[in-house]
Image 1 (cartoon, rainbow, N blue to C red):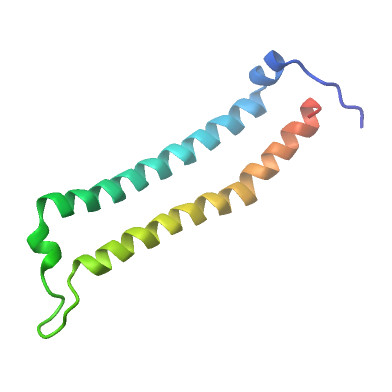
Image 2 (cartoon, helix red, strand yellow):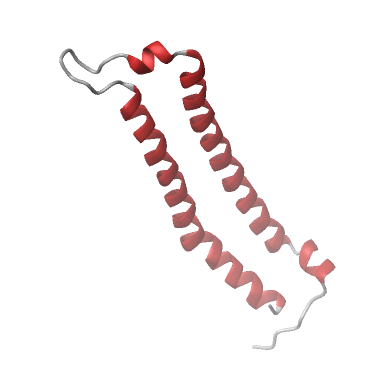
Length: 105
């Protein structure tokens, strides 16, 4: 298979490259917004509703409701990262390889 190298302008105008960049931007923006809502939502709870976070999970227990919410915030951040990694490994890398083969990268 003969591969012809393209200029930067040709690469940027390539429909497959544009589709690749668009998909990456879409998933990145969605996951970034979700992470910001999660994080700043937790911070807002700390700032504006401390009594709620300080309330006990049940009578006689020392654990407050803030602990599982904080742990959930951390775990969801990991989940968002895992989603991106799965997408990158299964979709993005495959598309990058196809585009590279086509444009001569």
